[in-house]
Image (cartoon, rainbow, N blue to C red):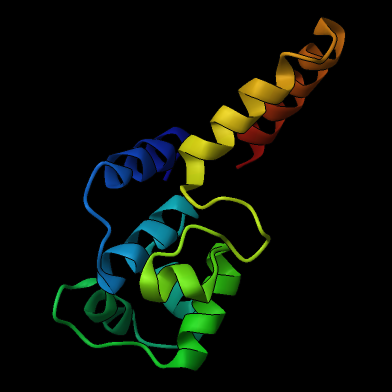
Length: 129
């Protein structure tokens, strides 16, 4: 799936209520740009297992799977379980929106030539994804 499609999906999911474990698992996966199949391979489970985890009233993953899922998607187990707003790295949770806002705020203090270099780097990375 193209990077822009993944980003659009992640933003779309952020508009939905994520007050359940199943919803947070799905948001973490989609925001990380992973399909159910890709996540299931990384976790060494069946694809249908990930589907059940993401379904309301579906199966609940073990703490070991939640821990690994958090590591893979870069969110804290605490956020997955309860929706706490701090990620594993100590950064506010909220995936793409907060990261983009932080980048914009930080960029206001940087020279234009540096911003142009970063933009070119991002465009280059996008072509390789």
